[in-house]
Amino acid sequence: MNWTAIASIYRFEMARFFRTLAQSFISPVVSTSLYFVVFGAAIGSRIQEVEGVSYGAFIVPGLIMLSVITQSISNASFGIYFPKFIGTVFELLSAPVNFLEIVMGYVGAAATKALFIGVVILATSMLFVDVTIAHPFAMLAFLVLTCLSFALLGFIIGIWAGSFEQLQLVPLLIVTPLIFLGGSFYSISMLPPIWQTVTLFNPVVYLISGFRWSFFGIADVPIGMSLLAILGFTMLCLGIIWLIFRTGWRIRS
Image (cartoon, rainbow, N blue to C red; front, side, top):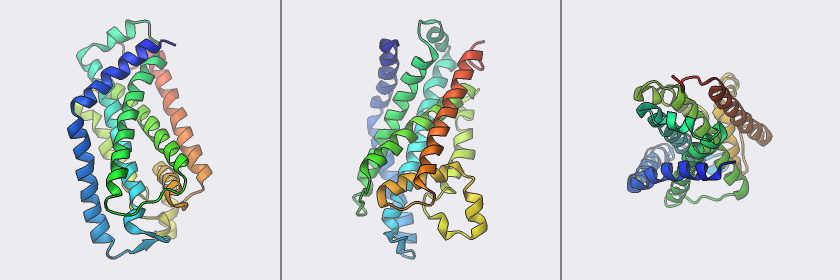
């Protein structure tokens, strides 16, 4: 394992993040505050509690997942797309570095950035509501696994994309709607029975449910299914990336 190459890629990607640290810090704080104003104040005044948890606290895991997932995808997709766009990816492919080391560098940096955003949002939410974490180690595990798995998805999108516009296509048209319809701001038990069944086909439901369980000990689906879902998604993304580097799809001219 070429740890020097992994560290070099990781440091290069993190340096880009620290150059815009103020923007990276302020943006999630402002957006989280707006969500609490809109959902916590407007809707929270009508819905006092959800399954014994105050509505303001109930939406915190969903807010964190919303930002973490989108940030993981955007950071990883841009990180690998830009070298492909300017042509420097060929220098990387010709270096004595295998695909796993490349993935570890780019995905590790993207996951670290998303993890930082998640911590910032959690800290910001504590200024608005009283948040307790029933299972802190489980919460951290779900958060890290979510960052890694969706950073892998973003890496795939960055390789697939043929333009900067396509980088936003999948997150905006597919991922974001799945997050909003995956129980981010409500419990699926509040839906009619037919829509509860339909919602269970949304993979994001299992991530948000497991993450919310780590906070409040309540979940829409069994915690084991949530863990299997995120592990299966991670393995699927790794398999796709392995196939991409093996065939050279969208990488080699």
